[in-house]
Amino acid sequence: MAKNLLQVSEHLLILKPPSSIITNQQKQKQKQKQIKIQCCLNRRQFISQANMAVSSVSISQLLRLLVPEAAAARVDEEDSLSDWERVYLPIDPGVVLLDIAFVPDDFNHGFVLGTRQTILETKNGGNTWVPRSIPSAEDEDFNYRFNSISFKGKEGWIVGKPAILLYTSDAGDTWERIPLSSQLPGDMVYIKATGEKSAEMVTDEGAIYVTSNRGYNWRAAVQETVSATLNRTVSSGISGASYYTGTFNAVNRSPDGRYVAVSSRGNFYLTWEPGQPYWQPHNRAVARRIQNMGWRADGGLWLLVRGGGLYLSKGTGVTEEFEEVSVQSRGFGILDIGYRSEEEAWAAGGSGILLRTTNGGKTWTRDKAADNIAANLYSVKFINDRKGFVLGNDGVLLRYLG
Image 1 (cartoon, rainbow, N blue to C red):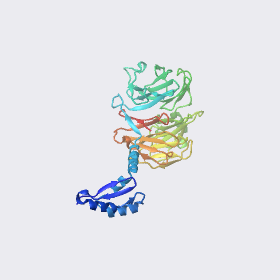
Image 2 (spheres, rainbow, N blue to C red):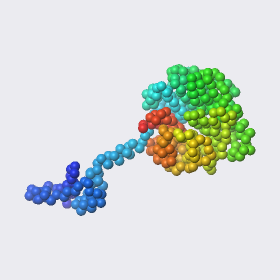
Image 3 (spheres, rainbow, N blue to C red):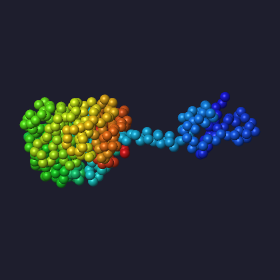
Image 4 (cartoon, rainbow, N blue to C red):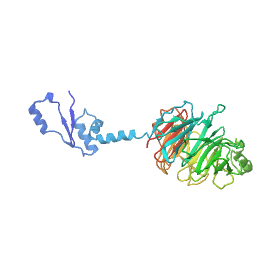
């Protein structure tokens, strides 16, 4: 028997038999006996009457016909889950991207750094990038790894390994190389532009230097290296201090100038605040070794451990008390967290893991935007609440769409 045909008007669900098997008179009678089902019926009433009237039409089909707006809303919601897109870069696949910054007066103009002497420039907000050649940073004898970049106004700084310091006063149109002392302890891993002709620089051995004359002179902000501090305080009960290899695995700066750093083995961490003469070592509060640490938007600390664990410090400021937060990392390590606002943050990690929180880190949900990208995502950087990037290995760069 032929299936009943289903016709939906704005307010009525009308069931009509096929015209090929009834007469005109029967059509008239049938028209008078049409079943009227009000769309405002509750779900149970609707399903009951629909089942009696049309057994051959599935409930899901009826619901899709009656509530197309709801179905469309669900599709839109699924489409909006992905807040990131990949930006393809004109670089070798093996390049690891390490840092990104934009000129404060022109958020269309920015630079991204990486291994293998990689410097790329954009003038359209990060939609496309082109290689940037800086003659003073090109040396046949070295293959520079550019670790960090920072701007304040039109002034900008770049540091790298082997020891190299670049400075611009015209928003990156031209760069000059600033000579550095060969006595500098460790490799430069971070730089922060702090004011006119002023910057703050950190090495992987814990040395912190400040300049106020374009980098021609530097003053030590810390009186001794981390190794010296640990040798002096090794009896203070810092677990793993005797195994310290002399370098940091990670270092992060808060907006107000405080630092947190992770030892190379991940068995303890250190903090420093402006005015303190030494780094302050801290025992890790968790069994697994620390992968990375940084500052939350509210001034507290986040802590990532190897294997995918995420912890948040209790309260704000420096503390050794942390609480674990449940995350769906699929067993891959989480490598970095970047805050878009005080409540919203994104975490990134191994095998394209992307996680999002909208309540300050209490709960996290997974974004599948990078599931098909075979790369580790090392760094999350938000320039402001509308512009953000995720940096990874193999030249992977993700741009925030909002």
